[in-house]
Length: 125
Image (cartoon, rainbow, N blue to C red; front, side, top):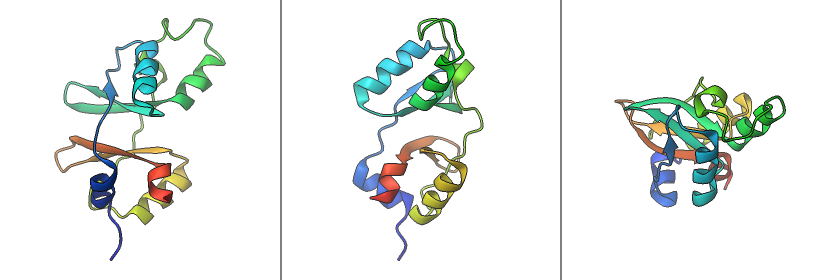
């Protein structure tokens, strides 16, 4: 039997750490540091609108003249978010993450509600 995302979330937990697109990047960085994660989902209201990662921040800092207190999450987040359902296989997630160069995938239910986030480290272990 193939291992599913649902079974992965049962093992690792389904905590979801998030920010809003209007939050300062500094607040997002603090949230990542507090929870020792490399990315956060960006949720406005009930909608998943993006993902912000340490990589997004690092890339933006190369061209931005201000600091993270001058930046808004919505300006640097990844907006084209690929998601998976709990029924997806871990192997399929690994393939998607490798092919598309994603390190994090939000897991959503049929209604689009974020149920968890898996990372490349989760799928290769």
